Image (tube, rainbow, N blue to C red):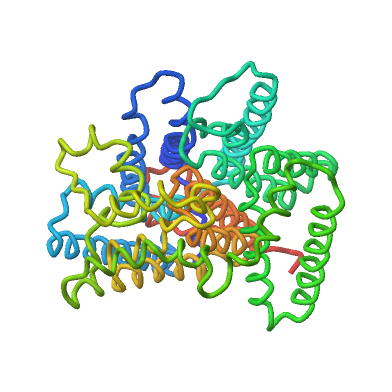
Length: 479
């Protein structure tokens, strides 16, 4: 291992860490700020902050480790390829320049933030600061969601356009799928806290996990639990070469599923009734069932607008189909974006007409024809989908070396088949930070094992001089 991996330019890193925290806050809190009166443009600030954060991190990082640089270049090249496919698709389909910019940042910003985080040789203190911001924000989200639930139940908080349960949205208050995003963030961070914070009592760590699960039940976010179960099963199937872990995970998920079905059948709790209802509607799920037809409707609409074989490769243009940009943002903010040159495709409009007229889709977003994997393919074709999957592979292969990070990535994969939640910045960037924290913690453990310290004159030098100064390695006597 190249020992310069652990060079720590304190002043530069503090500034970069501050930028990362600002980038996180710019996607985590704008919904609630919008609700209390901030201009709607607050929701678009992160489109500028996240790329700027990456640029500063890349051009100021003192990292010299060859493997780390190679991983960074892979992410950079893959994101540039994604941008190239978007430009080609936009030219083919006459999409607006603003469509390219918004779609590129939406799809790439979690990878950009991960890259910004791994570019920095964060000390234990810096990691603790980033971790604290994440944990406090997640705790605020849980507490606020539970307060909203009781205020709605007692009639002290009235919401328009949402069912009472759907209005329990934490810091993502009054956004389309805010209850799902809020619960997903709560569960991910609670799991991370349960596993990572070993110095804290088990009871306190379990308390936050139980609170997140309670939020799931009262906000009618049943699909989030289904996502985690499926992701857990997928994780089990990655463990064939580790028999002990495979057996442990398989037994654990089996017991969990048995306990869940027992609770659904025997526990009288309103939050569990929805599971019983949808599990009993087996006639919907056949090959030609109404659920399958509703789910595939968006893909069929997209195909009906293909005019040449190039559409299979490059799609109908960024933001023109059923992804987050075409399905939601251009619709909700058209008065702001159309004057900037944004373009809206009939495929999106036709899919929305279907969504507002189909009883099953209105009953549950599980059957929504607007979901991320269909959206990426519809917007950018098989080329764009392939590049995006390659980006995911880079993160999975190089950065997700622990099971918790892998579970988080797998949940995002599953979300991509339901609605466009995978593209929700507040959720995707939370996952990015969790993966970055896990990666840095592994690096710091390696550092501790190697006993790496800085040479005595290193901290007094400028950043440029440091790059040429060898590190002093203190031998690890325990080895």
